[in-house]
Figure 1 (cartoon, rainbow, N blue to C red):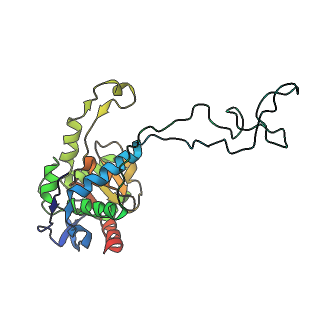
Figure 2 (cartoon, rainbow, N blue to C red):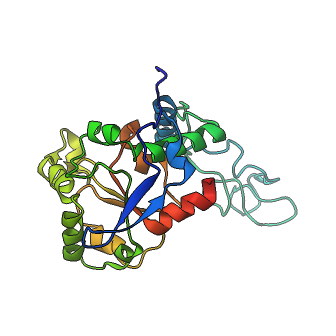
Figure 3 (cartoon, helix red, strand yellow):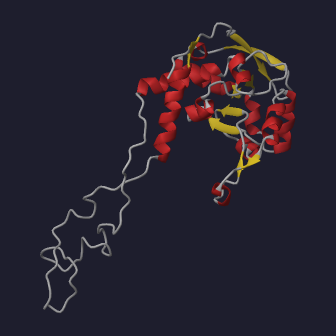
Length: 266
């Protein structure tokens, strides 16, 4: 995999804060994490590690249910030939007994998980956070931005208490972010193959990511918007910031989430 590092030279240290009407109400100094060089190779590795860990087939311990002294006492005693623990009549070991082995346990024949070092994973998250503030990377992912050259986009904490989808839509229109959600909605397509019969009929892209500090109803308001994800800043991961391993997702940051990043990474 090729090595590519993008220095965030065009990053302005001071960015505006918007209210719910799309007007600038102040400015904020960005934390140093937004000046991290974007390592696309590390971001891809971290994404693959995160993806493969969730699809790794699960196996069982070969000795599960077999750590016992139970043996069958044979025939001629008027009791079933079930393995019983020595010194008692309690059955064990057999598949139909409590705590016994499984009859046909799942076995893992292939190791597909790709592991990544802890420090590399942290660097990948920092790089992906910094990529959300680089205009060229955000546009390259296909996102639509109307008149928003100053990235990242930061909004006041009041947006966290929005409880209606119609109110959230009006706010995103005023912030110039609604066009990107419409882009994803127009490109929804039906999946090819048998997957359409298995509760995953439609395929749709990724649009806006909203990083919040606490949820006062915003998740409920945004759950039906196409491609929109809402995540707490404490749980933000490479899957949210760089879907498919491609950095530069269109991200809306809440002011308090920026302050959390400042406390965490300086």
